[in-house]
Length: 120
Image (cartoon, rainbow, N blue to C red; front, side):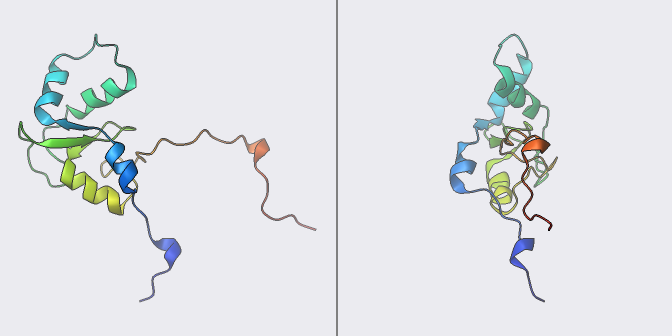
């Protein structure tokens, strides 16, 4: 069986991966209990959303107080650090919702798109 290079899905690089927030599950639970009022904006909302889950969707193990989780910035989903880091090195999307954790660039208006080839 031949694998074509264009079909290979590349994961995230280490620098990007390490830039995503890590948090103790115990801290997420505290933030969940103190929801709202912090005015922390989108990042705080993502952390609070992550606290809603009580188990890792990758390994299906329940979180323990001392577990270190990684929170994906775009969707707010959280997973065991080792589980999601392994996943993201192989796949460029959240394992739960398939959203890219890398912020998407601003859309280019159709009027600015230049065709690759011109017909004669």
